[in-house]
Length: 124
Length: 321
Image (cartoon, rainbow over all chains, first blue to last red; front, side, top):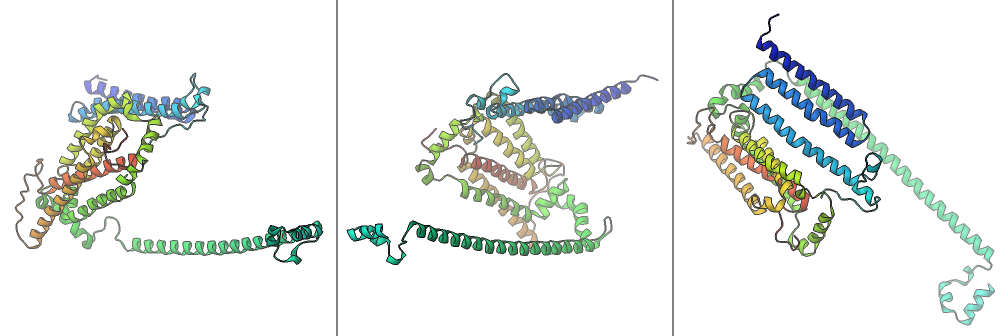
């Protein structure tokens, strides 16, 4: 079997795609199996960052250099910008509203500090 | 008897007034107890009777309600099945409906100058429909403003100060967060640029006024969330927003009215079609796309702002903040 550049590119992209499938599977399993929300976010983040990166770079390698490649790169950039920010705000909501945060972490959340007596804020 | 009668005789007027009929004054505590019990029993009986009647009414109403629901559902199902049975089968040629479609597909490019047939349809052949949709958005914005806008009377009553006090207490005033400021710095220009691209590309490819306007509106919402409404006010205050919406709708109405007038009377409308594929092509489609996009963006941002703080943009006129 001859080793041509197309052959190498195909297998690289295939392995990347399989790896992204694997990480997305881990993400799904983690999201369903973990009980606590921050653990779930961690598991979901694997699919959001690693799985997305591998899938898009596999598509990049498979299609070769074109105008579309730039769009795919921009996709990675924007996903990596917005996804951690969304996770940041989600975890902040958890920190501010969960009264029993000390059961899962070594911190008391903002709501746990006041023993839940004070009304915690919402989005206005 | 003796006790009360004696007090009445001694001049206790209150007791006299309370007792209207001397015969009703019970003679002994035993009699009093009996009467109380009788009253209680009759009251309970009355109440249970009323409850029984109410329950029966509710039951009959529920029965009627269910019957009407079943009958109307059956009617609806029948009408829908009848309609489905009457439409032509999939893929079958129906000269009555295909005439319009064939005209759109075959002569759309020539007649409208737009590569995107859908844009040619919604902004040229059926522009009146799109005008109505834009006015629906405008009317929705007006309704939300009527319901939620804090007017001067309310502000003078101190409602806004309470509002700000509540706002300061919350933990989630996002405009003070460093993360969202960085996010806004990076993302807002790209989102706005992409929205402009989608609007300007409407006649040549997928896109158009509605989708591009929604993207621009989302970008403005992110901007207002990240940097506060006072900053967003510098670009899109309430006055500017209402002027933009009015001018867009007026331009749309006049431009399309002109085209309809000339077209109905067999005149030439002197609007160049341009070469298909260029940005400046498609006759009126591009300007109308821009007008629709502006209306959609302003409506989205206005909704967000009104629902979030009861005003479009910041409120410099108020005493607080």
